[in-house]
Length: 86
Figure 1: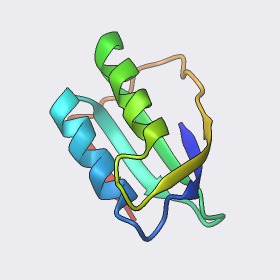
Figure 2: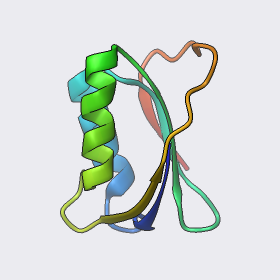
Figure 3: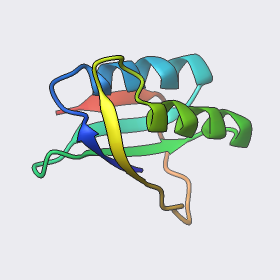
């Protein structure tokens, strides 16, 4: 996933992690140099749908998602948890 808008400096990554942990989603969230946020996530289909909805709505009240892109990767990655990357 890649989102743009008011997604940096508003707690977006940490609230995304909180949602991911609640839904047992594994992967990571990371700020990108262009002001967007990149998320790589995996988990059960129903939980992924809930996670995507939360990301689109912005998991933090101070944030605002202007654009949302989602690309499905062909393989699973061996994530043990959801991490915030710097």
